[in-house]
Length: 97
Image (cartoon, rainbow, N blue to C red; front, side, top):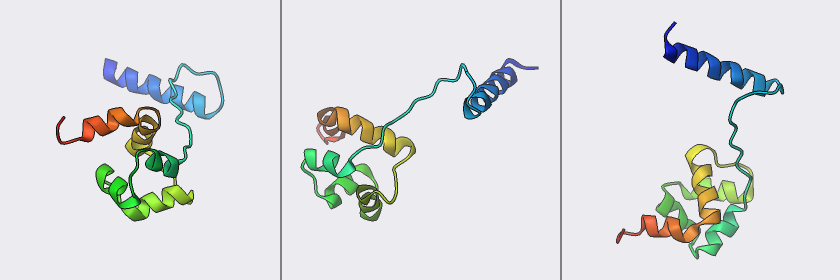
C-alpha cells in the first residue's frame, strides 16, 4: 500500500479511537464557545459593520449573538483570534496593510 493510503488509514483509525473515547494519538483542537456580541462590541462595530468586514450575513451574526446558532470552521477560528488579538486582526484587514 502507498504511504498516502497508510497515512489516511492511520488518521481514520485515530479518529475512530477518539470518537469511541479510547486513548488515541489524534491531535484534537478544541475551541471554546464565546460571547460574540462582546467581541463585536470590544472592537466598536455595529452588527452591519462586523458582518460586512468578515463576510457573513447580518442574519447569521444575529443568530450567533442570540445563541441559537454557533459559528463553525474558519469563522470559529477567526472569532477565537478576534477574542484574543482583535487589534492584529483589524490591522490585517485594514486597507493600508
